[in-house]
Image 1 (spheres, rainbow, N blue to C red):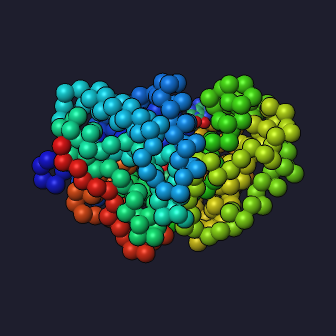
Image 2 (cartoon, rainbow, N blue to C red):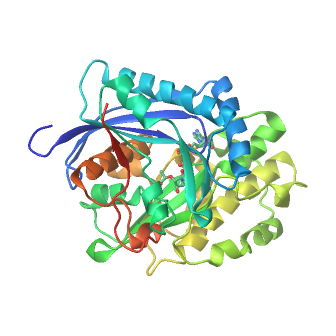
Length: 361
Ligand SMILES: Nc1ncnc2c1ncn2[C@@H]1O[C@H](COP(=O)(O)OP(=O)(O)OP(=O)(O)O)[C@@H](O)[C@H]1O
Ligand SMILES: CC(=O)N[C@H]1[C@@H]2OC[C@@H](O2)[C@@H](O)[C@@H]1O[C@H](C)C(=O)O
């Protein structure tokens, strides 16, 4: 560390369970952010199986606790995160690691959110202080515990004119509205890629609809879509957040493979249109991050259905694949500086809240 600048590693393993993203940035936890490196390490099929089994168990419990299957998965992913950091740093140093962990269940209404991975083991393995458990303080204070990235979006967007919206299309979608005077409104929008992924996996064993080609060859069933979007959840004003498993494929189950993909893709676009209706004014542009920005059909439907100019975040020089990992590096530094990471407008927490636990090696 020198003159308030930290070299920080951020680790994110998202709800798609595709693997671990690791980013290295230099930051002061405020307006200065310089990207220094990024890599992704895919989970092997064996790890994914363990995580799927853990999720199944976690969704059935009243509160997080010891469980042999989940504990085994946690040990395994902690070791994989340590390897990812070593590969990223390649012998170079870092001042802190922000460790998100793998979300296996998110139940803020029950007072908890569950990210597995052992920060103390990681800190010892790396010899670097770790900031872990970044969501719990927010939930304990009455917030949704998600989304947390808005504070990082605000740092990146300070040079851009507003109002803009940053849309993350991961397994679950979330939007950050950045208005005048640093106004931040953020919330989860719906299942972004989760249902599309589930649909193509169940029917053809595919991990995703690459480029949106399957959806492009199908036909959107507007009647089915209308039934899907009448769910009360979409009318609920923010703050709000979702578990990846809060929605199901029931509504499209009778459709052909291609029409199901098209209708689910249109559903994701519609959920964003409904989300934007909760904002005080329409954003001038929608900047899209997360894996869903690689789905050309989804990007086209988003622009058509929202009527808002839509671009991948690369259009303003941000790094869409690295953004979440960079964000957790940034949040780790904010923790070291005692700065809040969640706000009434982003998670519904009553007051700006410092998040994460610092673990010395
Ligand atoms: N080339 C592509 N074409 C279509 N979809 C893609 C492509 N690449 C990635 N995706 C989609 O993006 C998803 C992964 O996105 P991302 O890595 O942003 O999610 P995540 O970080 O795991 O989730 P979350 O943000 O919900 O935690 C994949 O599951 C897939 O559906
Ligand atoms: C509990 C949890 O892991 N939530 C994730 C998930 O993936 C997207 C959306 O749902 C968002 O709320 C959050 O992640 C991002 C990184 C966030 O907190 O901003």
